[in-house]
Image (cartoon, rainbow, N blue to C red; front, top):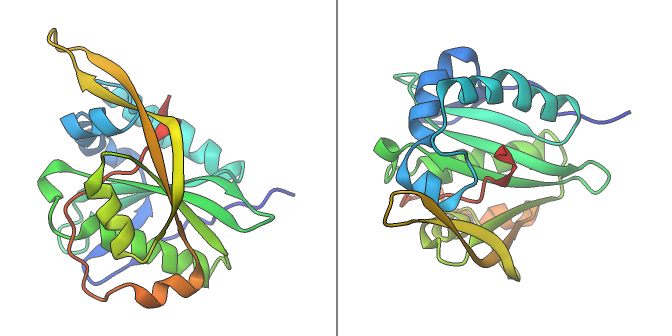
Length: 212
């Protein structure tokens, strides 16, 4: 039988990570239509509220039920406002490995939310779910995302040459695909010992390539 992630809630000092629900549709659509999300991810641009609703009600539940991944809303503990999402994907239950990615809303960047959410997710995966490896992939020029990976204790393993597509605005306002390299990062249970308790964040993204 295929293993699956549970529907869970993870709390930190400032954040609550929980399953996305339909009430998140407007905030999710707004967040995904940010210029940097368009540049560094494969989220369809523009993402309509209908598209956000389909992701929340159809795509994410299907991925979880199939054992491939898990999508979590990242919300502020005090305001309950959606500040971002964390996504697990390409999960291999035999070797207890998964790929982690994250997106933070434009207004919430610089508050350390990406690092805090990613670290909390990693602690849950290694502790409660007994995972042995988490992988992150960042575009070669996405230094903000690379800083988040470093802050939570990830180790850079190498470069996948020409394996990533990023997007650049053309003069007519449309997006143009540009091929670049992926930097591959890994996090093992023992690596968490090097993660600081207070993590500063510059608001990064890892590739969110399974949206289309």
